[in-house]
Each structure stands twice: as structure tokens, then as C-alpha cells.
Length: 382
Image (cartoon, rainbow, N blue to C red):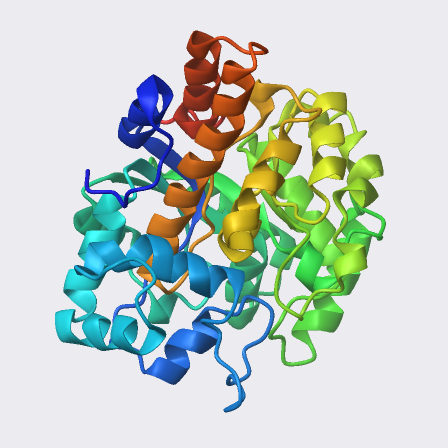
């Protein structure tokens, strides 16, 4: 596995360089060539707007990390200029660039969410071919609901349940996911709605030229239908684009939902979490079925991701944490998430080992738990 220089040295550093990861929440990389403007827009998680002409997204923690860690994989020196970086990217072409970054990530298993802009990015099969790793799939509940609505069905609840059940039986599917944080926030009633309430909400939605699902009743219905099937449920929390109200994406607002007896029987995976990663860690400690990651924030915090990852180890049991990149579009993000995670784990655990607080054996064991073992157990990866 080709990696950039700069990981911690010694036994722990060597171990982390070769540790194969399970990226438990990720998307595909772009299939077509991208312009400089499109590249910089894709670097900004918060806004889809073009970058103003008086600035560049390369002048950000993500941009600096990208030039530091990704440039060597394009045969460039670390900290090369943004102009030369992008020029070299164009010289190599999308296929070559994508293959280099996905293979260098050192990921054995990708759990792929295809529910967002799937026509712009690689299919799960293409991710597997480019990375030479295995892929597994996530069913996004709101996307499935919108597909059902588009059929004009008269029995929404029955059709949604039937389709989800069929997908859940597919050997490729290992989890479901909800983006209710974007659609209505967590501060809603997430108890199971009655059949009558679901039928009424569906009639209103289907009768009004349905498109984007935002109805809390139908979103809650989707969640509880997924709970019945027993597959792990991923929930976007915290940091994301401006479609969500950040204060309504705090995972602590899910307390009543997590206390429901039926929900306690399925794994609930809180994705991303920053800046609410301490709240997520509390929930992972308090509820046996709750897990979390800090994936999306690590890429965007760049060098400061070391502190984010260190803070994620303050409270939660180590068996309740997972690795993810949440990379979408730019293949640099698939590699960078892994590179920054390895660096942060090495810096954090290495300091604790050097201070005598942890043994080297325990540091390696916990790194393996979070890097891949926990994901293999939660998602029953075979």
C-alpha cells in the first residue's frame, strides 16, 4: 500500500500503515473529469455555491491537508502549489487519479451509501474494482420513500415495507440510513406512528406531486419499518451542508427514540457527529446499541483532526467507535480520511504509550477494533 510520509515511527506507526480499514460510511468518487471550479466546490461540505473569485478552498484546513498528504500520490512534493496540484491531476486523468487514491486508502471493506447524487459518482461495483476492496451497500430510507411515491402507489405503507424487506434480503445490503437531520431535525416525535396517521400523511404527500420527503410522520414510519427488519440503522448527525439546521442535528435530541424498547434491539450508528462528538460518545456509553464515528469532520479539520479524534476517546467504550471517511465525489477524500485517521491515532495513542498510560499491545488492539473489527461485528461483514 503506497502512503504519504509522516506517520508516527516505531512499531505503532508501522502497524498503522499496514492496518486494513473498514470504511463504514462512504460514497462513490466522481466518474467524469472535473473543472477547477467544480473541484473547489466539492471541497466545501457546507455550500454548493461556486467559490467566490477572491478566495480559494485550498486555503482551508482541508486544502492544506490535501496538498500535504495527497500530492505525493500524484508524484508531486508535499505542499505543492494548488495550481500545480490541479494541473497534475488533469494530466493523469480521473481514472488514474481515482485508482491511486482508492487503493492507497488501505481499505478492505467499503460500506457505500448510494442515496445521494448517484448519477455523478461511481457505483459500488466500480468502487470495488478501482480500490480492489469489497463493497457493501446502505439503503437510504428517504430515497426509497421517494422512489415509492414516484410509482403512484395507492398503498404507500405496504409498498414501502415490501420494497425495503426485499432490499434487506439482498446479500449486498448491510444497513439502512436516515437523513431526518436534513429533512426535519431530531426534535420531533419519533414514536411509531399509527397506521391511520401514516395513511393520512401518505395521502397528503402523494396528492401533492410528491418529491422530497419532509413529513415527520412518514420519516418516522420509515425508521420504525427499518427497526422491524433488524438491520443496523445509520443516522446522519452534526456537521453537514446548509440544508440542515445544525442545532436540530444534535444526537442528544434522539434520547426518546433511543429509549424505545424496540429500537434498543438494533444497532444505531451515529454518523460524523462533530461538533456534537462528546454528546455522541455519551450516548454510545449510555445505550448498548449505539455506536458513533467522527469521520466527516476529520477531513475538514485537517491537522486539527488529531484533537477531534483524541476527544472521541474521552468517554465512549472503544467497542462502540468506528472508522469512516464519508468521502463523496473527490477520491482524495477517500484516501485523506484514512491517512488523517492513521496519523491521529498514531499521535494520540503514541503519546499515551510513551507516557506509560497505555501498553503498545493495547494501542494496536484498540486501533484494530476501531479500524475494522467493530464494523465487521456490527454489520456482520462476511
